[in-house]
Length: 183
Image (cartoon, rainbow, N blue to C red; front, side, top):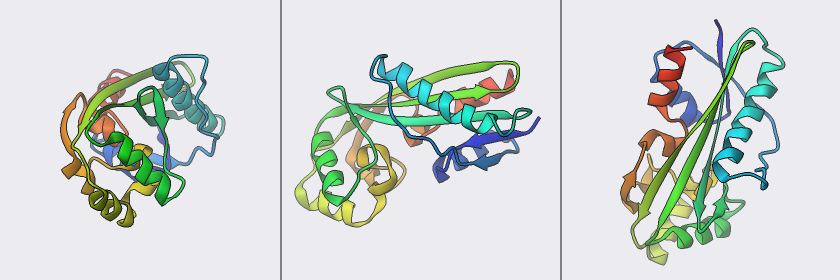
């Protein structure tokens, strides 16, 4: 069965490759709007479902994998920053605090749909303005929820994580692998 990753994220592509499966990538061009009437976990899973459905509509014989990630602090969702100042404000909010990263995943084929998520707690060190400015000026935070990438330069900001490291990057590899193996 053909497997398609419904994502434009280069990180998700790298992570799915760790599962050892052949797959194609198709970008799911959707409005990434969270459903505010349900829990954050349900909302991110629904967004992953919407991505998967969008691609499945064009490839109904394939197994589609949709995923999305949000960063939460004080129940505020930190999406991808719109500009440098937005990125700096996000990093100031995260500085010296614990936040959650939630990655929702949907696997879908013509016979079934499986949604699941991974919730991770991430502790940030206290950042000074110089560190924030230098990181934002690197350009790295601009395409990432919460304005940071755990696998990049921001690795120096993180003092601890509780949960799946790969889910913070955008795809809980072991859970995806297990579900694919048992599909």
